[in-house]
Image 1 (cartoon, rainbow, N blue to C red):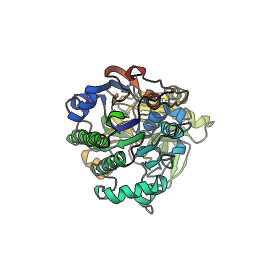
Image 2 (cartoon, rainbow, N blue to C red):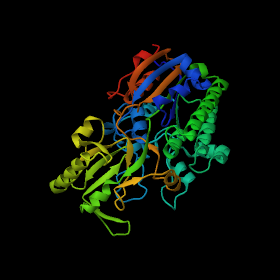
Image 3 (tube, rainbow, N blue to C red):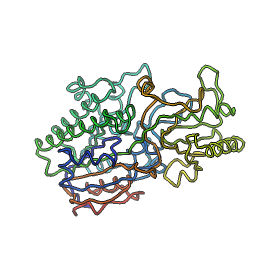
Amino acid sequence: MNRLTDHLLIISFDCLSALDFHILKDLPHFQTILKNGAYVENVESIYPSVTYPCHATIVTGNYPNRHGVINNTLMQPGKPSPDWNWYRNCIRGTTLYDEVKKANMTTAALLWPVTGKADIDYNLPEIFANRPWQNQIIVSLMNGTPRYQWNLNKRYGHLRSGLEQPELDDFVLASTVDTIKTKKPNLLMVHFTDLDTQRHYHGFSSEEAMSAIYRHNERLGSIIDALKESGIYEDTTVVLLGDHSALDENKAVNLNVLFHKKKLISSNGKGKLLNWQAYCKSCDGSAYIYLFDKNDSASRSVVESLLYSLLDDPKSGIEKVLTGEQAAAKGADGTCAFMIEAQKGYYFLEDFEGEYLKTITKEDAKADKKYTLACHGYSPEKENYGTIFMAAGKGIKSITIPSIRLIDEGPTFARLLGVSLGNTDGRVIEEILSI
């Protein structure tokens, strides 16, 4: 299969929404891409629409129940800070970067989710020190490309302030510019999280979120300049995409509190979970309900009765209840007993002590990072909840199309670089390609 481009640069602006277009169209560096390339007005995300499943979908072309990354975090009931799906081996099947590497092209990734220990030539994976005894730099070095990361940290580490934003994205930008100039990889995947962070803690349309969009415009300008200085701009395809949108919320639903009262969860009374028969695993705007024993019909009956009684209460925060089979039909994890969708204004947490419903204030969001003022994870069928896609450069037509699905992006990227992801859930977006 012939290649349509020499260099593919994929920039993921986490939480960029289709609703942001009215701002993006007037920003000069986004204009550069929009005026000369393809623009998709609405991209349907996946279920649950959270970052790690989304980014695994982008590089595989498959839904979560097929690629295996069915949530951001692992099912670790009672853990205050569960581990994330950080590692490449969390993904079943092949990926875009695997196929590009097999074709003897160079690959690079900067803070791209689910790439820990991946076979990527230049890899600074998104992974954080999740235990008090761990050191952030050491954890990153051990799970990516050590010398490459060490050099980046030595040159640009002063820009960082731990995982704080916008400093983290400033570090990622400097690392991206350096990688373009010194490595000129055939595939470069970059993940910026500034906007997502600001929306979580300040709200969808907050001044902080709008400032992040303007910072992203400046970051894009620096990247375009680096491509030109490196002499590869004319031979590069630049893709800008979002993984999901977000919705404002101010109420947290703690279904595990009710499970606790129903004796489906037991604790020591001091905040430590001892045993569970049923557990609500949050995906923010949606949640999986798992049974410890899938054949435990008594617990299933209690859970089912409780869920449908809550569904009848307009103030419960629950909008929809799906069976495991119905969740699988939407691409989510079919091994769950049930999947639930939050009403607008609500999201799910995993507390099993305290109140079933908690109203979240700005002070809560500032004081404790588990509380947010906007989140995602909702069904992609929610109104005004689409994300965005635009591309320009080699192999791309100047065209506007109304919609695609997130699963269509991976096969399209593979086609641009002359490789294949095999039989995928998504399709190649032929209409944007200049073949």
